[in-house]
Length: 460
Figure 1 (tube, rainbow, N blue to C red):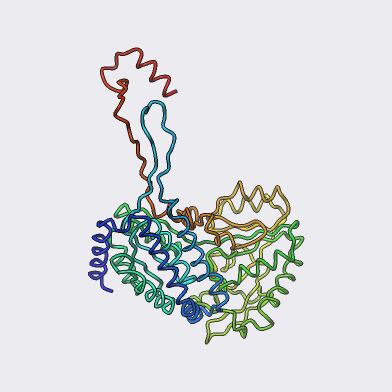
Figure 2: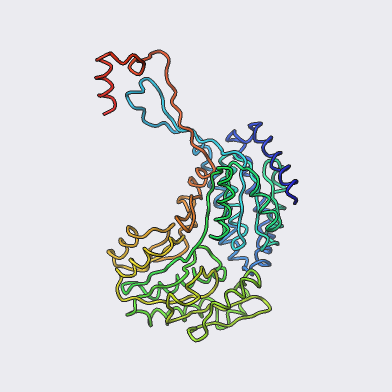
């Protein structure tokens, strides 16, 4: 789609929004129900597209994408009416007599840019929140997951008129053309580097934005942890979608006294979950493309590989790989891995690890496996990160009852459920002042001693 076509599409959406048709709550709920039914209708095709793009099994495709989308849409169907109501707030005595409230209103015309690693989930999930809040949307899926982009376009075209919700496919040229336009709100999920570019463009128009980025999410395992269970859960989260998960545990910080035990359990769990030859496992996925495959291969230091390390060039597959004796100077620690490579670093002093993490970029997620309440409290209170889990990984993003998002280098803003509705809404603060009384204390001349006493009483 050319820049002129994108501009014309946005203009059509502006005109559509100005008619007010998206504002009534019943309209929003009808659109959500339509989206839910259409996603259900094409569930098989969605899973097939995910298999083609990322090698995901149908089970994983439903568990991590289609199923979560249906859960979010159904949540918004149930709660949009309540979320859309005005919220009465306390009115100070000095404003007597009046009624104060906050009224959520849609931003208007929005842009949603989604990535390739969870191409269906991270496109339709925020769209559900966007629709619930009463906006129009242009959806831009990633060019790296073309099969999923195609089914997304099919679903959206069947559900909605383009002046309400439309899909723009393509690559960098389309991305640039979209970011040149003036939207009322932009929602972006992707890398830190691209997020900076999005923010530069939105700043030109003073457009509010939510950025869901990534980073190197640490996973701490101390000596008090249930090592067997820790390894089981970490292996699941690390190698899910071949490690191409923004909240995957990027690297392990393991207390030295339990490192050997943890490493043995990790090896056993990889075999239990993926088999003796993961590259022959039909449910084990692949790296998205050759560029990322080559990048990951260059991060593997063969002399530090203690498990896995096999590659299959023709299918862009890398087996679940574990690297031991890793240091912060190794290439694998210089960038977000976003692949099936688990570096293990060790520590003796927990307090020292906390101080080291304080000096690193704020990650999207942080995990701790421990039964030491002091250690858990330190992680929760002293470190800044988007979100995480205690004694588990990844699962914190799978609920509509909690917001999901980053902080600092890992992003800004949250979504899912009520937080998603709020992200796509502006809250107007309104004072409805009554006319049957008008206190004179605010008007000049300021000579009335009674008013002065009342003013001091009200405002102290």
